[in-house]
Image (cartoon, rainbow, N blue to C red; front, side, top):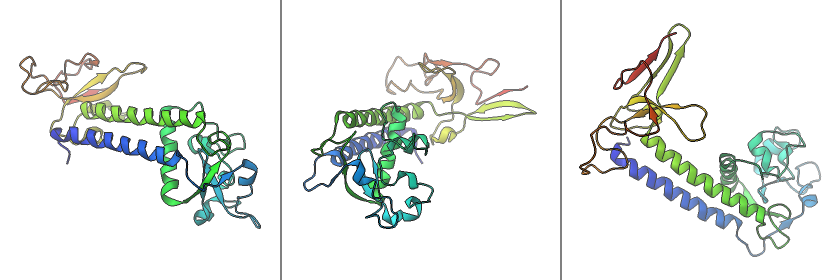
Amino acid sequence: MLRLGGRGLLLGLAAAAAAVMAARLMGWWSPRAGLRLFISEELARYRGGPGDPGLYLALLGRVYDVSSGRRHYEPGAHYSGFAGRDASRAFVTGDYSEAGLVDDVSDLSFSEMLTLQNWLSFYEKNYEFVGRVIGRFYGEDGLPTPELTHVEAMITKGLEASKQELKEKQKFPPCNAEWRSTRGSRFWCSPNSGGVSRDWIGVPRKLYRPGAKEPRCVCVRTTGPPSDQTMDNPTHRNRGDLDHPNLGEYTGCPPLAITCSFPL
């Protein structure tokens, strides 16, 4: 079970994971001797139908042999639209129409880019990498294009954002919440609320985040120094993070109550 003292360890692991992933991405996209390059018309022949030379799909320009997963990708299967092309966008949007089965990911968000990175990890682990597609992500020399460099930068930023989100979640774990038509809503804190195991419970507070339309309920530590101070700092007031400027109390809820109820 993770305790408060282990928070730094968890964050360190997250940072290490981000560094490993960045290194892995560089390995995925760096030049390789004897690499096979496809043009889109050639890749289109690999749809797994009768007489086709194989069953391939591409993701971010990387081509994988998915023959071992034939039941998912062969003609008539649920994901057959991915075969014989780079349909990177559809991995995020779920749009399996011809208009959606495309490789344009230029307007995806950081989190959506991380979804693509997760799919890339899946294919690297489960299927054989066989080459690259000349086009949006790789040039005729097999080297990454500026668009792929942009994707890599987005993924790296997404990993950093995830690390910061994890750090904030350890500091301000989400509240437990419920709503019932007969009793109204209730927020409360527990040693495991928000999926964050810790040795303190905390009290519900509204957390206001820049750019967010509404605050969200988080559990706030009430004793010890603020999270950005050390235990031996003589200036802290033994109020935990209660004085954080982005926090607000719930009207009608006692300041140190671990449960806030709002009847209908």
